Length: 163
Image (cartoon, rainbow, N blue to C red):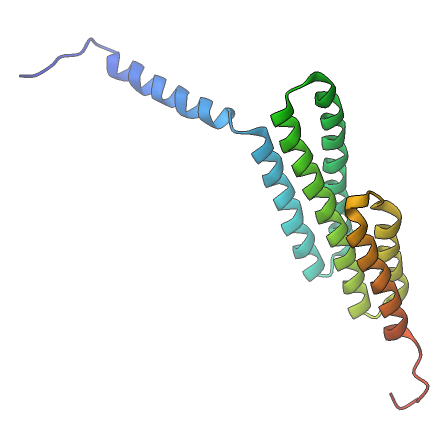
């Protein structure tokens, strides 16, 4: 037995399927989109650093910091309005963004240390100490402070001119 469908029915089903497919893409979680953008910035940061494009790497890290600042504003606004689940997710991503950018500044300091540019390394480590002041970011400040001390060891002039 053959079932005949009204003319255009298959086109309507196809169009509806396409609409649902597109709608599901549009309804993608904003949290996931931000996480993906942050991941792209991190990958770009390290790609630029690897290619010795320091200015571009710094720009990528500044973009991560900007995202963290924007998320902090969102957390404050939504925190007053309710919606605890979304606020928690936004806060978690904001915290990740801040931690990631702190780690990137430390990596930049290490890069400058390897390139024998101690002043630039110091500036990068000091940036972490000055910027990441939240109690939860203490580990990054301590790591940067240790790196500053280690930098003094690495960049101190050798007393023996043959070394």
